[in-house]
Length: 64
Image 1 (cartoon, rainbow, N blue to C red):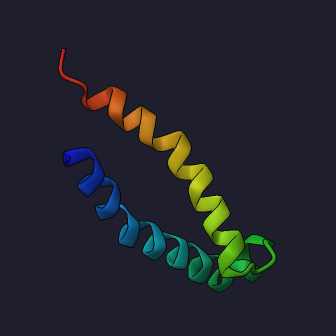
Image 2: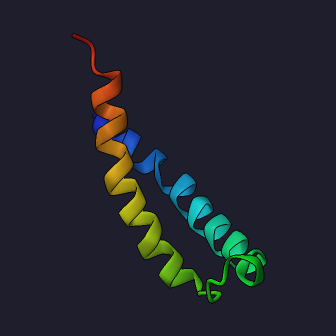
């Protein structure tokens, strides 16, 4: 049961991090040369980042 509640607990941080990515990408678009993108594109990028970072964090925190 713990796995299901932890999955549901990851929802709000996911949406917040996607929104923050969209805001900061738009705010720094002139300086970085990146075109501003919408919330849906930001969610796709956030999913990609989470798929790369989550296993690394899980492997680093695994008890031996």
